[in-house]
Image (cartoon, rainbow, N blue to C red; front, side, top):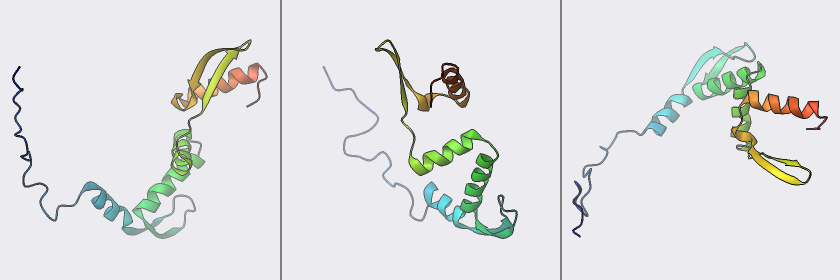
Amino acid sequence: MAKEQTQFKKGISGNPLGKPKGILNSKTILERFLSCETVTTNPITGIEETLSYEEILHLKQIKKAMEGDLAAYKEIIERLEGKAQAKLDITTQDEQIETVNLSLLSDAQLRNLIEIQDSFGITH
């Protein structure tokens, strides 16, 4: 059977000129922008100060977490400690029924699981 023909020729680049010199990639552009400073009110302390845009974004995330936003808190913890790989083995009379990856559960599902544990007197 003959080899399938493709639009690309072997050994020839599909983009021979590549990215033009001097064009910045997205990471470089974002790093440059986020490092810029501005005088603004610190969202946590309420004091006017000079902050980088990166610091402002971090402070806003911290403030959301402090106000009870569990998703914001979870994001902070995952960035500091890595994503949790917690698993729960569900057993009955020494027979394993199921393993649940807790990191895949929503906040509401985790709250329900805690309520079920509490109703059975299971410590967590």
